[in-house]
Image 1 (cartoon, rainbow over the protein chains, first blue to last red):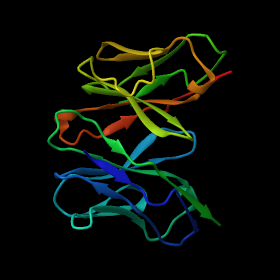
Image 2 (cartoon, rainbow over the protein chains, first blue to last red):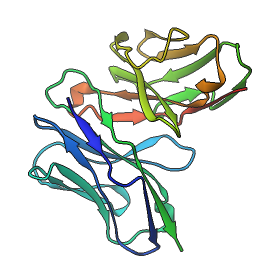
Image 3 (tube, rainbow over the protein chains, first blue to last red):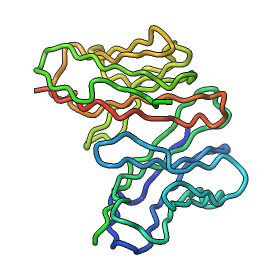
Length: 115
Length: 115
């Protein structure tokens, strides 16, 4: 069975500072990995995804994530955050072999940006 | 495409009343998911459908909850009778497994308050 662990429930950072949101997954097989963002009072929106190939994945709004198979991690990074990045971020994993389209979500990390 | 559409966006009802939440998935998507999000329990998968057929309803909390998908463009989640502990945001999501990754696209959610 697959699982996802987001190590930080809340991350406060100052505006224009860099940020890293941590995500570790558990799986005995290859995986697809996702980061979703949820802005206040909105649904989840895909930020980026890793399917195969280059381990560095670039997403929307200047975010990127790096797949590290040996450390089973998929940390999300942004070099300089903006107030508008205030949101909750969810890491997620799915099994490419499965005929189902089920995604396992982490518990989320709330990113708060201080001016 | 308009994306996943959910209605109503907000619902306030009294304990014991029947509540029906509606979802229109993205045209052409073959999977539909219902999630519930609360502060205490985070994001929970309730049920999902493939080609209008329920595949896994193990996340449905109890018999008061039921979901249907009469055709490819419409699904409902019904709670009867509703209880205060059902208060949450309910999300519908859809995906197209044939596209490869099974990325899920979320609707804006229905915020339910049961008094």
